Image (cartoon, rainbow, N blue to C red):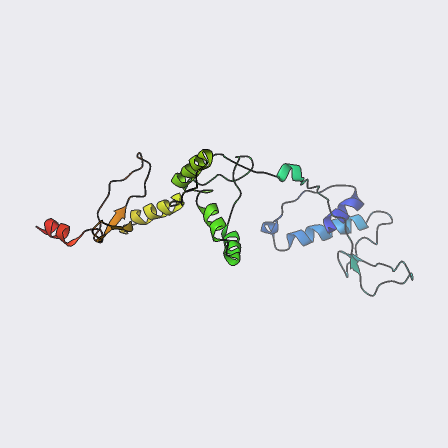
Length: 231
């Protein structure tokens, strides 16, 4: 503001870096005050700079003609025009590219990306109890590869949409934890015809190229299998 005021009275323009204190303590203040003092040396410009109140000048009340009790900062700011139009901002997506790792839609209008649904939006839907909407946004509309394909087929064929599957981001999290040496796996309980139940490890990798062989963990082995391994 003050630098623009000095430039207006000197008839010049200035372009400086935002952080110029690297050149010395209060270098910005010294530079601006020096330019204001230089502007005050011009004819009939002695009122521009006041040594007792640098950067401030005496201002008079336009209604009464009396001077204000204290000097007031007066300056001229450079105005930058920011163009923000709705036509350039609005964006929607039906289908588009996905991230190779997380299988979530890309972000940004330039990449034909999806709308970000962050933590606070999740909390808002949780507060309203919109469980089905929240489930749809976090699964078939995001990174549930199998679920979104099945949902598309069901919609095209006019059939009920099946239940969502497991998000790809959860699988990536599992792989990261396993890379740290943690024995983590997903299990489900299968019930046989005779009523007996069995804990079975589930392979979440549906892509054959990315499929890892089933690695039985301690929890997924029954007593007979454990005895066979010990023998």
